[in-house]
Each structure stands twice: as structure tokens, then as C-alpha cells.
Image (cartoon, rainbow, N blue to C red; front, side):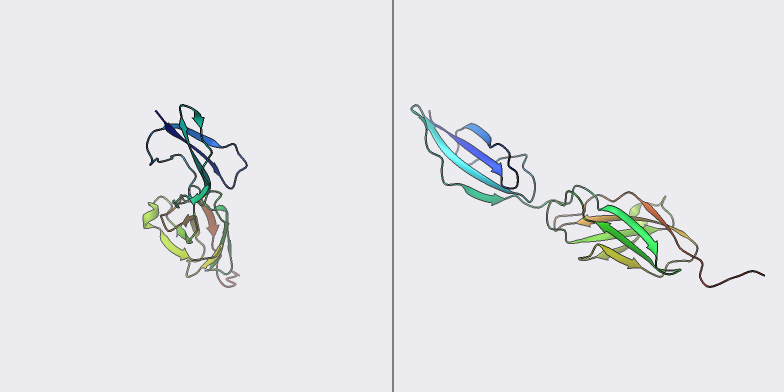
Length: 170
């Protein structure tokens, strides 16, 4: 009885080859791979005499997934009494091409995030959010998304808006 051996490794890592043995079909699915990653794959046949030479290698890329982690280092500060600037860094595990970010903000953080106000950002790691109420505390969370879906939300941060004008009491 002859069978096939598949050897494969990630192109981005200098790790050992992974090996799947005793494959008796000419079609085989390898699970447990990282998304949006290039792999190099070789196939060889084994019969009663021994293992034959490996095939030419094939390089293939796994599909994208939604990000597995949230944007990092989310920070907010006020630009004026009613406008805040929010900045962040891209997630450690984007799992694909980041298509953009969603910034959620609210004065009522006990509400579900689906009820928060939302601000979409295309290709930037910062945005301004205006038309805020003065002298309020806003809670802000950010997520990244790929073409496949949304990643997890960042931990909430709080930004306090300022009072406008010079309302001095005498």
C-alpha cells in the first residue's frame, strides 16, 4: 500500500517543517494554520521501497479572518470644548488587511455598544469626533475590521470634555 507525505512550513517563520503522514487520498485539508499567511508545501509518495523525492514546492496564502485582537494604546484628548481626538495603534493580530476602524463613544457606558454613537475611519490611526456636549465624560472604544468582519473592541477609555468659554463667576 502506498501513501503520501505532506511537508509544510510558514514562509514567515524559521520553524521546523510540519509533517502529515499516511495520507491515502490525493486531496487533503491541512487545519490549524494562521490566517492571511504564506505557507510552502511539498508532497512526496511512499511505497514499499521507501519515500520518493519531494515535489516542487507550492506557495499558497491562507484566507483572511476578522482581527483576533483589538487596536492598541487607544488614547483620547480634547482639541476644543466639544471636539476630541482619538488615536490608536493597529492590532497585534490583524489576521488580514485592515480595511478600517470603528470608533464607538457614549455618555452612557452601561448601554450596549450597539446603542453607542459610531464613527467609521478608513485608513488612519486617528480621528476627530466633534459636536460633543460640554463638561461631560465620554467612554470610547475602538475596533479594527478586515473584509471578513469586525475584531474585538478595545478596553474603554474615558475622555472628559471641557467647559466652553471663560465663564468666570464674580
